Figure (tube, rainbow, N blue to C red):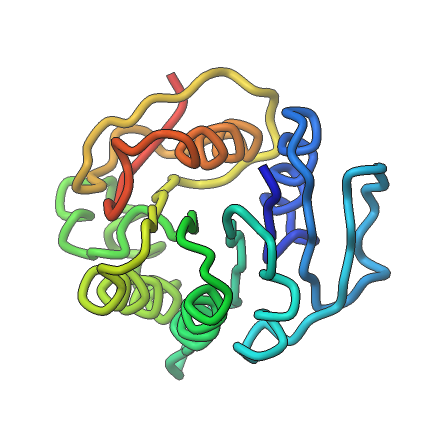
Length: 212
C-alpha cells in the first residue's frame, strides 16, 4: 500500500515507518522537521508539511491508499491543548479533498477517564490528572471521528504506556478500550496499527490493545 504517515519522527511513528517499509509498503512521511527523520529507504519519501493545513496535507495525500497518524502533543498542567483535534480536522479535510478513505490513528487508554476507576492508585490519582489535557483532547478527537466522519473508514488504536522494547505480540482486550496491562512495545503498536489497514473488523471503531 501507499501510506502517508504523520508523526513519523516521533518514537512510535519511527517504529511504524520502519515496520511499514519492512512489510513492503511505500511510505510518505509528513514531518515538521525533515532533519529529524533518520530512516532512509528506497520506498520512503520524506516531506516537510504543516500538519494543521488541509491544503498542504492534500498535496501529499494524492494517490495514497491510507493515512496513518502517530502525532503526539505535550501535556499542559494548567491549560487545555487542541493539537489532536486541530490536526485531525485538517487530515479529514485533506482526505476528503483527495478521495483517500482509510485512516488509522492512535490515542491512549484512559481518554475516557472513567475507565481509570479500577486502575492503580498511581494511574488514577497521579498519572491521569497530570496528563488530563492530553487525554481530554484525544477524547475530543475520538468523538469528532465518531460523530462527523461516518463517510471515512477510520480506526483509533488505544495503547497503554509506550516502551522501546522488542516485539512480543498483541491482542485486543476490549473494543471499548478498557485497560488490561500497563505497558506495550511501540513495535507491537506499530504492527497492530498496520494490521488494521486490511482488516474491516476495526473500521469506524476505537480499540484498545496491549502485549500478550
